[in-house]
Image (tube, rainbow, N blue to C red; front, side, top):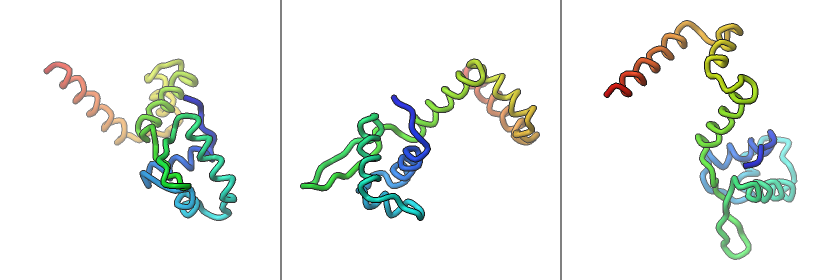
Length: 124
């Protein structure tokens, strides 16, 4: 699946929030300055071509909806980030977060709880 531009990702977030939408529905959810309708329609068609959207036709109107869930996209993006910037190591990710002080003591404690719960579930 092809990478999304920042603009395309923004459009997809609208679709994930709305579920199903016409081009004008998406346009209504974009803040000012809004792109021209035809530009947005082209971007949506490109998202469909890239495999992110599907559509249902009602006469001349197309209702678009996500082909990929937000959680599946987030997982793909995170895995790419880990593999590309952190040599595939989750340990390197956490080390980076701790060193950059982007993670609090409470978050570390909460993560430890999650790890403990995961290990406990594996034992059962």
